[in-house]
Image (cartoon, rainbow, N blue to C red; front, side):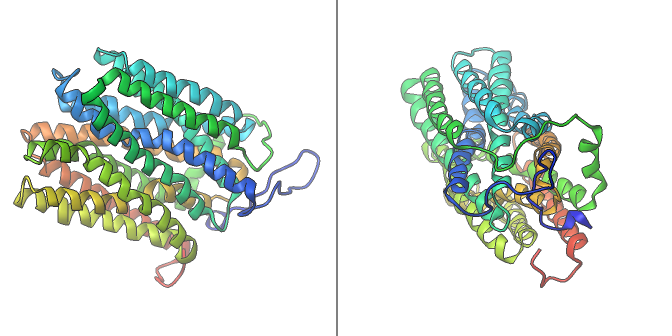
Length: 428
């Protein structure tokens, strides 16, 4: 079937046969796009990776009168909007390219962060941090991934791994900066400094991120959004990704709060998110490099399996049997960061692998990430509700996260089986 083959990176030129524009997998231009896309991921997904710091801070400061689940709705809106807007952004990208998406996204993301810095009420945080900022981040995030897909084929997973490492480094820089600056200069100026950093990097992205293909405006067709669901590999990839994202943000949102409540040194606990994101840096690049050689689905299955093991065999029993052990939290953060790091870089690479036409990669990516957005929106609030029902004990949300990750492994295995059968020797 067409969907099982590598994408043919071509573009229809008006009045002529399909022909490529530019060179794949090589050249200064291609790798310059990777640099700009890296900046986009640093500012977009890297910022979202700091939600654990905000969860803890809001619970003890501006929003202390609200429940953990209510606060998590603001923070879970960030990945939801980041992904959900892709269903519209993908079509705009396919028709017009990334130029205006990057410019508008930069303005919205920076404006949202700056408005968050002066927010005091729940609805203000909801609008600024939960909607405006991630909407702008979605514009630059989707443009970066779609542009990268047009420049690479054989080295696609490696390119996506390098690009997504920006989110890892952002997830190191932003939580560290927030943890250090919030107590010393206050909430307002900490957010403003973050906004200026985002602005500087997105200026670089605006100057470097370009699509390899010629974007040709086409009418919007419902079939462009529904046809991917007729492809079994796409449906299985979507289910696997949704289950994974149900699980992925739960540790990111709650590991800091749990560690502090268990008696871990408050300053050390504040760095757990930094450790997790730092460990995800090799977890983004290495699986991409290995995946291009040994099979991207093979590597993704291995990384998801490791994530499930770390949650269910380390985080869950470790914190039950030895609450307050800093070593348990540090080792868990390192291993989970590495194992879960593959999600951001590998999912777009897997989508590219099963997509027959790269000129429609934007809308297909938008459809996939819109489905993922629902899981991203619901995962942390469900975990918060479980936490409230259990009167502050964390084993229930740990089981929930681990079970979702196991389900993700199952669906990735099913997708691989549809593509290449049950033989484990094939590089898929």
